[in-house]
Length: 280
Length: 280
Image 1 (tube, chains in turn red, blue):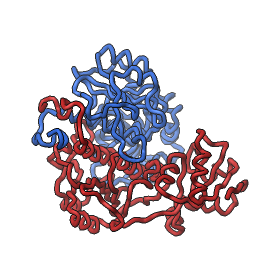
Image 2 (cartoon, one colour):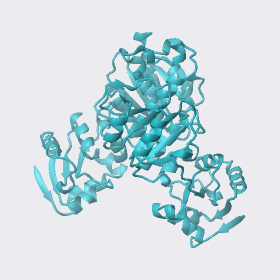
Image 3 (cartoon, rainbow over the protein chains, first blue to last red):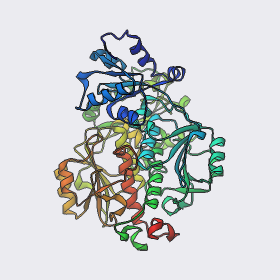
Image 4 (tube, helix red, strand yellow):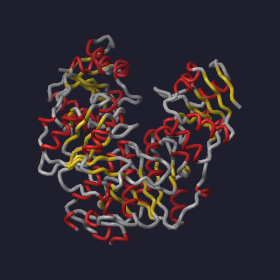
């Protein structure tokens, strides 16, 4: 169904504005997905948007109509908005004329299906939606099998998380759990827990990440809790060679995930670069 | 000098508010530094703030008075603000009661002093202050010798850059240059240029980064320009194992810098993890 919307008093426009608030998202079980790439990823992952707002005057590329056809095929009503109406619902400085309302899918640990030697990311108590979104994007890129959010202090479906994740929020299996639940789930599956912390002795690239492994990172300000630090099979640090005593949490998670990628990489073209020159 | 400020009509309060705008920062040659860690890094790096606003009711820790003493020793006037006044000048959601006005230092390429095998980061046309700040923080952490910003589309002294950099903007030598200037400067110093790009054949961990090297990354949306792609001695990609076709630019820069750190690391405690299992 394709509908023209000229007025911001339209009920679905009002719903889209309300969904910026977490309480409305939780009540309605719906979230907002703005932007071309974000909606493409969501549709690819099987998300079925209920409504898809668009504004042709704001389109930046030429593939938007394909995306709209795909959304319609997934069951979305296409809502052709006048520009002022679209700007009312957009939460971006420079909207690209695409914004959908989609159902929130909540997974539990029991929903996760893991391979024999999974690579997992555990994110404890992270506060900033942008950091969470960036970690999801990196987890997708590193081929992580799942992301477990423990005791989160931000909503997974915050529009800024969706945005920073570039839509990978919908492609990486993500679940929310309490820390004790996550720990016993990991132990039952014999997954080694690596805690990323500046206080560790061992460097991250000196730690074996080839088996089943969960990389755990903590909150922006205080890092991992005593619970995770104590439960970890190994604590690793990223070398800090400057004045600062820590990295951004998303940068740290990305480095740890990609160290696992490097170690698990099946082959090398050039064995001379597999270690530092002194060990070659 | 210690002055109590009760009114937001105070001239220095007005100045602090104006300095949120780039034009005012450029005109005055001054910038804002908010937060404990940011100001600590700046003072450690020799920055001499002209004025240091504080609000005791907003302090979060117990080391603030040391910081204020240090700022006073560096020549800053200490401005004891009533809470509403401080909230007027703060650009944070949760201010920690510390904000200074400090002179902007502009470096040129000629000001940079490099070691024999420097590790440099070149950042072309990045738009988002948060990404730039995160890259500065990672460059500091990775012990990079300098960061060269080419044709920037954001102001280095944007308060959000200062913030995301956690003050490392003041500890890492940063310079702004045009791309042709930077290229001829790098060539004159025989620094190998590695372009980070998803279109490369070679993986980043298969590329030798042990010599003098400049890692170049491009703008959020479009990556490096044809100029840098053509001029690079080598193009490297970070493996992308998920649905997304690129990483956040700050995540990518961090990974490339730390691959250089890994390769340059002087020794290993455990040689079994120096390569992937198949090459061990």
